[in-house]
Amino acid sequence: MINDASELHSYIWECDWLSTSQDFKKSMILTMARANRPVYLTVGNFAPLTLPTFVAVRTMIEYKIQS
Image 1 (cartoon, rainbow, N blue to C red):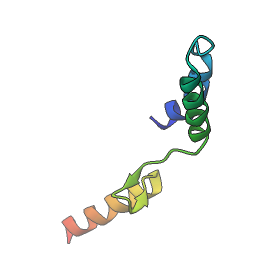
Image 2: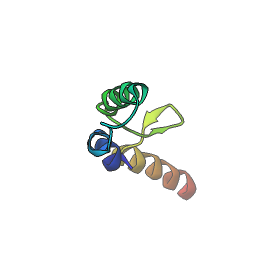
Image 3: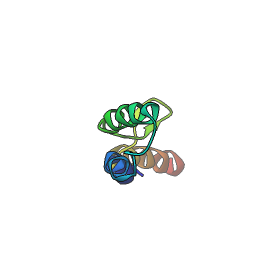
């Protein structure tokens, strides 16, 4: 998902936007600008879901189960 999101601006640029309305073109520019921001997943709006975060949470869960 993250890899596809990073290519979103390319997909928009390659569509047939020359024959579209002025409103669509403005929306396309805004979407392309927003697509340049990095995309990341969060865990309940608390922490970014990265591999180190996932491993840390899993380790804590396994530790609690073994205790």
